[in-house]
Image (cartoon, rainbow, N blue to C red):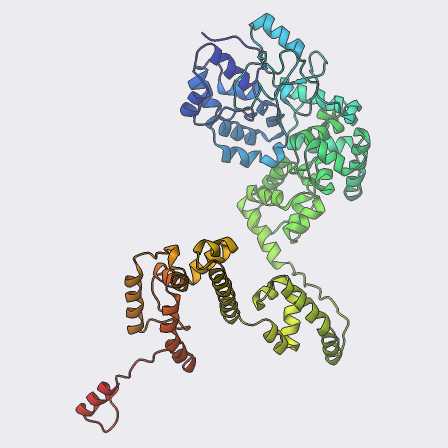
Length: 609
């Protein structure tokens, strides 16, 4: 059984109606069959082909899902014809990457509310006609806060019974909202303006297919007729001021917050002039309604100027045919760029400078150049290479003699020393830490007071050894004092400070085991094997510059924790040898025979070694 539904029901409402008729079980079935979570956020009807074939059984075609049951039928009319076709095909196939290439996420803006919206009068009509409550497409457009049919305030559904991942009908109620009316949407102060009424009417006409053509080429023609001015530079800010005053915005921040488009003033001004720009759909429709209200009714019948005149009279390169120039002019016109764009590009300036003059984004100019004929694109690159490059201006600094600079820096030494000591009191005890914490202090002390810096901030290895040895001696004294006081009870050492006992257990295990045999401390049975590995490393002369054996990390960690005294005893002689020969710890014996020596003599020498 195929349910009946209104023509403007949303995709979510259709899924709820078909579920109630037994076409599928729950949303898990949709995830398994289609591979996408069915949520309220699917405002563009992504995967329309899969929905039509597997769920609706071809009762609703993919084109109908996009045109009537989603917002793709509204915002797709702002694109070029071929771009709209490709975008719709990407939505039908479920290709999110291709869909975002034509309609980026930043331009979509807030195309869906946080909660579903309903009109109580529309809900009563749905019950009378279909016996089921539906959600309607125009009610879910965030810019519209009233029903376009009944002119009443929309209501927001309950957050408890209308989560985004559940498929509940519009007439369902939970225990929370059964006996309480649904809240009305907040009234915005900008809804009282006539511009809001014109924008809402335009969105309604775009959805029903009654609006005029609003492609990029048509928007450029509309703005040129609505605001016939010669000065393009001074017109931008004037248009923005007129737009803000018509809507009642006090500043640019309130405009950005209302339209959910946090773009600069130049980008918004370019949108008002009809140029391509990365702004939200709601702001673009508002700019079109702003121009439609001030344009004559027969603006569509206005004569289109000659392409050669509209795009500037300039001398193209000799190796570029005139047909290519005309094709490039047509491409620029279809993209909605202003007159003189092609001439500005062929002047040889950078793309960023041209974008600043036109008031558009450099990324949009790059996309335009990619669509131009190959000959024109190569001619643009040659013109940019031949143009003289701008030299970076050197900032002139006041010249002072070197002796004066040196005296100034030396005079800062007491201040820098105080800053370094303050950092040391805060826990910074190494030179690397000081360099990261205060780079200017470290560099000045390193250059003019190196001895003081080395004395107060020693190297990391020396600092660590001194700190560990001092801490070991202090903790041993505390443990021995606890042993004398409580007659060797191991728990007394733990009661003094748990962290002291754990530290001694980790870094001084053998001493702690000898002093407190009652504690029953036991090391892991890997000690003999790890000692053997260390002895083999010493025999094979695999030693670090500090005298420790090069053994696996687990063995080294065990020896440093449970057998540190033995490890220090073994490392001490090798550390002394290393100190005498810093570059090579153990020089290999030479294979060359000494001069004037027999083979037996060489054998004696080797044996002596």
